[in-house]
Image (cartoon, rainbow, N blue to C red; front, side):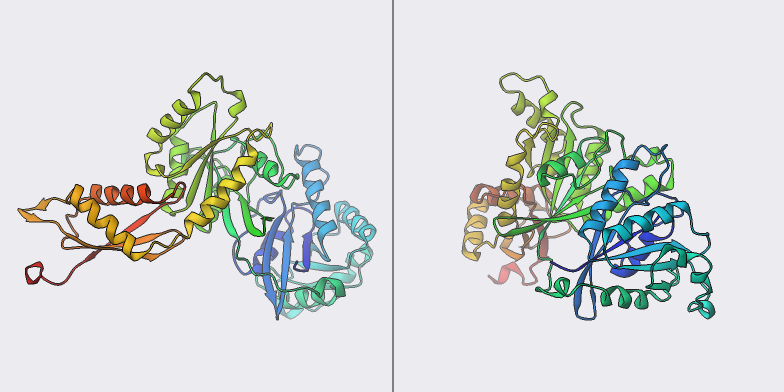
Length: 448
């Protein structure tokens, strides 16, 4: 496992900006709104030749009006416990606060090595000026400190050098971690049980669970392993309709969720079993289809649905009619709250993982094409026959096929669906999307 650096501090001192600087991309949400990050965010990066992991945490504070206060504190404490080095981030524009003194006591009590990072020292000429430190921050009791500017990227390298120098020797042992895991994005509208599902799968309180829509704003990555296979579970923010976006935090949450789908191999589309399929569910599910993710439709809150013989079949038929574009998706009814049928999800993901990277023998694809054309020719355009001369696989994860034809612009799209159905009849591909690219045969057919 990689050595771990945790970033802690009170709200709005720039923790997420520092996190993004370190990992080199905009993974955490950044805005001048306090409290955007509530859960722990993990990011891997290389420093020199050392693979490291950095954790972004929620702002540690003592405002009793925040209903998530206890959960935020709990997540910060977990991050501190799991870290090898702590970066305690403060704001040079604000005098030392009572919250920061309380955080300092917690960090001293933890016994972990700490680097005090004083942010927003934006003037390059004063970046090494120790007067900022001695103006009050020395009272926090930390010998290792550095003045930085996250917005300008000043002294970030120095900060990381200091943090790495404090890593315990045991943390530097072990092999570098490479991320070859299957990426699984948990997506859905707010309040359908996404975070509860993540926690039920992981059997720990990894993310904050609440009945308040929009609790998860950032996309949270969690690595886990089953039977030697590694997975990354991404819990995303609830996606709302654009017209319902009333503040920047919610808008940024949606962008974060969409970015998570961009890097996912498998999407778990979570639906509310009590509500059925809404237009917003359709919009969210279409994102997974557009990105060609393998897909499992999670019918959550199944325990609350009144059931009779055939209820699941009726629900499944209804879902497939509403989500025709996800005709290939697997449908699993579960209850994240009670844990009912949760155990069916990971085995299904494992099977999909194998199907997702399927390589189809060329001879079998030619046989499928020949049989398909004998049963149902592609038809004609302006009196000339449409001919499909070849069907070949050109990529996997997901499978992509090249269909060589003598006409592209007016080629009937329903014939591609027909060919897809023929392939699916031959192979077990539930949950896996298939993509077809048309290629024009240049030679004149009259020459053959």
